[in-house]
Amino acid sequence: MTRSLLLADDHQLFLDGMRLLIDRIEGWEVVGEAHNGYEVLAFLQNNRVECVLMDIEMPELNGIETTRRLKKTSPVVKVLAVSMMGDYSTIRKMLQAGADGYLIKNTGIAELRHALEMVSRGEIYISAELAPVLLEGVAGRKASANPLMEPLTQREREIVAMIAEGMTNEQIAARLYLSPLTVNTHRKNILGKLGCKNTAALIRYVLKNKLLDQ
Image 1 (spheres, helix red, strand yellow):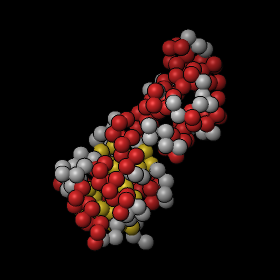
Image 2: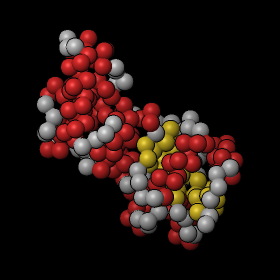
Image 3: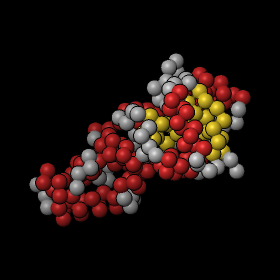
Image 4: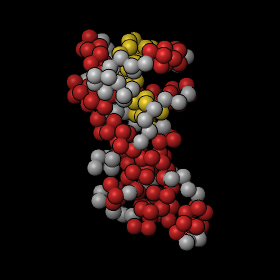
């Protein structure tokens, strides 16, 4: 079964390149293009679309507001953000608006294929390189007031923030004047308390429990 895609971006060169990538992904077909949010919403009124690849910085109506409106009128349509913007605030706003995934524009065909498959199954996909950005955001003051993070001690929250920065156990140990073994124990306790097997699972925990919605 072929699934339909709408491409939304105000740069034609990017649209052309994305079409070439989609043509190489079995089971997906580009059925239309939009250059701003209003064109996205208008297209969806008259066409069946399974997923929208949504840019964020579009003229007239940006991707965040477009996604918010789209999800109110067409909640079954999946939205996969594809943007050069990788800051915590933008990611948070896009996910709060209802986006089902978030990719950075330097992604390759393998990650794009994987992301499309995940969002089509109802799962959330976030580029791996964005995991530290999200973890750093929720490990700081935004997450500290959330009851779902209460199982963590202040020390464990500090370590979560450092893990988000990409620091190794040895680097964290040096920063906190602890032994690497102690840091590793803290890391295991963090994942255990939150029911997460690894960092990727921790990101899913963050998104599932809406720790970004603060």
